[in-house]
Image 1 (cartoon, helix red, strand yellow):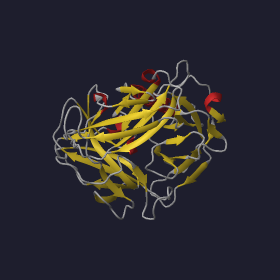
Image 2 (tube, helix red, strand yellow):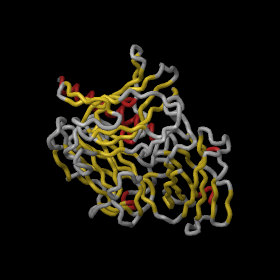
Image 3 (tube, rainbow, N blue to C red):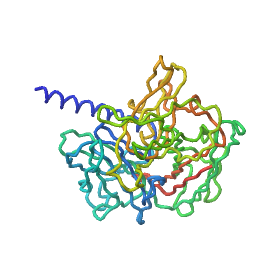
Length: 424
């Protein structure tokens, strides 16, 4: 009876967590993310063509490959099954059936797995590639891979990946400037771009083109469906649009921890306590000036002293974050970066220690190099701000992703016909 109640509780909690996640995805557009929904599954990663910095976008019919991986925190084998769905620009499922968007079988088992080696935290590393000899994509657009534990009778996935497939038919040119329509070289940046759609059969660009923009792949720092300022022939220009003004922010903070015995950048100490390693980062402080530091715009990669490419030898360490600043009411502080899905789940909310005068949190992370930042999310808001923690400086180097979707009249899905990465 006790075991039954515990299992029922786990299923209910997973349903609640997944429902909250789906709700968050409908509130903000998310073309790219990798998020676990259970504590036992960690470090979901997508890598395109062995380039850990590249966004999760591949070309339709090309030779690009996305490598997916994740860890289950035990040496007990789990039979994981993947299901692929097609989605529109706004994140909603398209009206296409599986045979319309997939060549091959939709459900497939993750059969590439390997136990960790010489680690204090036991885990099994699972991996798969897409496309592969059994599954290929027929159309462009957004795709989502949900991974299910086949031994669990729950209808909810343990993790979710989202990526995009592009058919490059529209050419995009873009620029970023600190001279915006609201300020001059202060704390903002404005994106301007134009798209040439001559190779698309577009009769009404204002209605058929759907641009979506992300800054540093943050789900909340995004803009969708802005209207073109000018349309001339086969070109649409998006300039002097205040919707394309973003917080400039600051360069990401960074820590390096490739071995428990060799604390790296921004790591004050590593201790072994209660059968686990704990890494204590130096206590951060709010930034009052621009940090002239080269970052990776929120990315992370798993690494060891032996170098990248040893996913089963990298250990897990409890990493403790703290930022010294007074308590603020009316919202919450969160830690942000790729390692937490660039979202604001409850697990990444910071707690406040009134005695010490700092906000803090801790997370079990795999050894490697991590970018992170602290953000403030007011209650009821959908967009977080770095104003109180990182500051805003016009000369910050940021990454902007521009997705150009095309929905012709009467079509059943949004095609992704253009994609561009621009750094200021």
